[in-house]
Amino acid sequence: MSTTESDAAAGAHAPATETEGAHLLKRNSDDVGWQYGILVDPNNKDKVKCKFCNKVMQGGIYRLKQHVAHDGKNATKCPKSTDEAKEKCQKSLDGAKRKRADKVVRELDLREEVNVSRVGEESEEVTCVGSSEPHKLGPMDKWTKAIDPKASRSESLQQQRLNKELWKERTHEVHKYIARWVYTHAISFNACDNDEFKQMCEAIGQFGPGLEPPTQDSLREKLLEEEYARTKSLLQERDAEKMKNECSIMTDAWIDRKRRSIMNLCTNCADGTSFISSKEMSDVSHTSEVIFELVDKAIEDFGPENVVQVVTDNASNNMGAKKLLLEKRPNIFWTSCATHTINLMLQGIGNLARFKKVIEQAKAFTIFVYGHTRTLDCMRQFAEGKEIVRPGVTRFASTFLTLNSILEKKDQLRKMVVHSRWDSLRDVKSKKGKDATAIILNPTFWKDVKLTVSVFEPLFKVLRLVDGDVKPSMGFVYGELLKANREIKETLGNNESRYKEVIAVIDKKMKGRFDSPLHLTAYLLNPHYSYASPAIFDEPSITEGFISCVETYYYHDEDKQDQAAHVDLIKFQNRERPFSKKLARTF
Image (cartoon, rainbow, N blue to C red; front, side):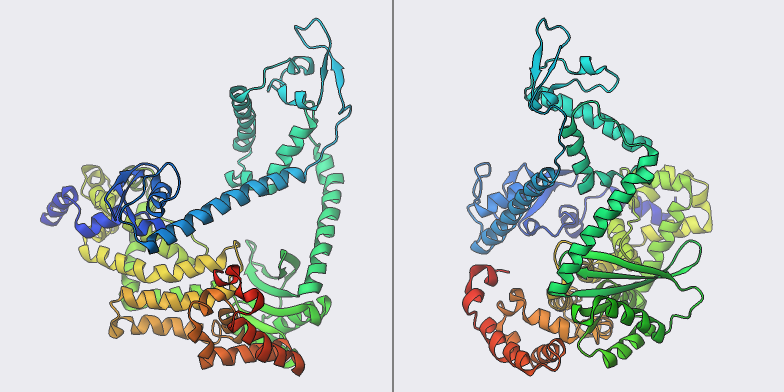
């Protein structure tokens, strides 16, 4: 073993530095609780310590937030927590409670949507095995059958005592049959979170014993036709929503496995996203004129009065189509895809020299590890079965997630490359193997990884916001990007010479995309920002954007333009009537 490797081996067993220790003891989470607590043991996620009073407690970050906020009966009250900390933790706890309550309500709503009538639902007379007298079975007795599909109907209807333990045992038996079907047919585990799956389980339960499963023929014919009719009916309901509150048209071009060029058109409204059409365009050049004609036809089909904006990626042909559409339909907005734009920001930053090198090094290491079965098995053993490569919604989201994963496993990877098992692998002795080892042993690599993750993270949070379906993100995009800029500057020590080129990349990709009149108006009309910082109402660029947005939306309607700009906005700014309510202030 070389001197460098010997030093690294010694370092691997040395105590972690204060900075490294802090990193290990802080979960990779946005939960506000981690501002006030740390893990006592990186391997025990339930044991946390309060930063205020140093009290150690079980129950994870949720219990710590109760401790800081003085909430709940199961947590002692922190004697040193500040009012600000109490407020933040209480807000987080209340949000978690609301989510749990909403989930329960949603589950009940899903169950109530299912209504399967049964033959003889009032009661039916059957002779139970081991019973001398006939027993009347009502609806509740349907739930007390033996969970064994191989048993006969008469055997499955034996009387059983329904209590908590029996219910738990019977539920587990049912789950085993469901799991077996999932495993046998390689069904994705997250399919069990699907609403339709939950409704299917409820429908089967309501039907009771003896349900015959659908045949292949019925699935491909009658049932398919019925589901098509149902889906068509749902789309008609959604069309009514579009006519009432307007909608957005979205385009997406992609290439399938057969190398065919496909153009998709979808609509989005308050009720969700709907597919319109898909067209193969392998034999057509994707010029601005072609894209404009496709989008314009879709607008015409839905009715120009029902379409408020068009959303596409940032390709030059789409930007050309934007100009053509604005000439014909000046009352419709053309908006750049937020996910694509933020990915361009991450890509631009990743191509800067000081970040590109470490990204290439991390890529070389992961390609080497995953390119050989033995090195991969070795890595998984040291990483306790976890992966270092993490997929994301975009290429550079994957880059961030993978770099962060590597940083989290810093100690394990350093121990791995100085271990005799790694050293004994034939592939490690190759040039690429030696390079991979050198990368992990290089202190500069880890310093650069940490810096890159810190710079990428604020933008990744915005990417996660715009790519999610939890809540509409338009009102938060501009404000969160401003916040990301501030955080990046802080990461780089508020030193202009260090952050200048990074911010320049963000500003370049943001210009003409996220500083559009629509984004600026959404930012202005979001109380989360404008009520917290009233100076926003006096920023010329923001107010000009608002006026431009009003002029576009109420095109050639000066009365409505005047109402929005000189009456409604002032009411909002002065928090009059509904805007004075607590809900508006705490949005």
